[in-house]
Length: 151
Image (cartoon, rainbow, N blue to C red; front, side, top):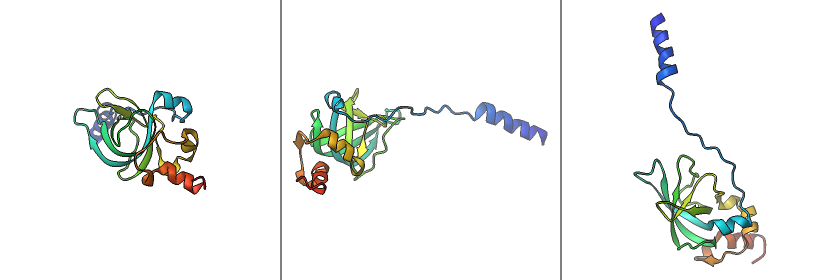
């Protein structure tokens, strides 16, 4: 019995430890300066797909409704970088802050400043009116303005 416990102790101390990479960043707070350095848009997640050779990265497919900075088409693909990926959910609306990507046009992650639209009032105040609206009827920025009685 003594050898069983000794074997378990050795296994736990030597064999079991796994390399874990934790994400450590300060959440970025969106500001006007970020508009100059980033692509910022709002849109609904249509689909999420794993990249086969991407170390756990995922491609997030968006239907874009509003654009504040950068050049974005009505359909956008954004690489969500692992292990620090943002927790996007299909059919939910987000304000996305993206940077130029290596393999794809845009990349983002947990530390980029992304927000779900329902929690983005402070972001809408900073961003102001979008430079492009693809679908004004579905625009979260427009809904936010209506709720405040501004439109």
